[in-house]
Length: 67
Ligand code: SF4
Image 1 (cartoon, rainbow, N blue to C red):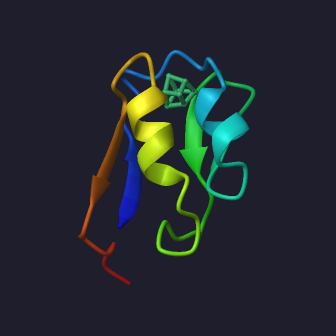
Image 2 (image 1 turned 120 degrees about the vertical axis):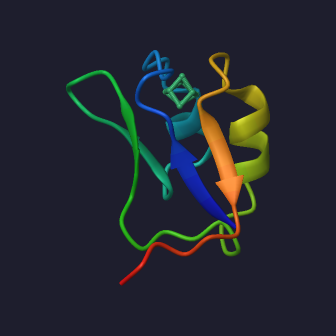
């Protein structure tokens, strides 16, 4: 699964970074970003991060970004 954060919804609460620090990182702009080349297959915490996101900003998809 590939995680995506909708920057228009993210409120920068940091839950995802706390639950899944190898996948999500909150930048100084107050928005969470998916760390490059991180993968939810290895990091099983992505589902939990998506469920616990208070803004519903995390989506998990099967799409790989085009190279
Ligand atoms: S849990 Fe959701 S709202 Fe909070 S920082 Fe992560 S993506 Fe943003």
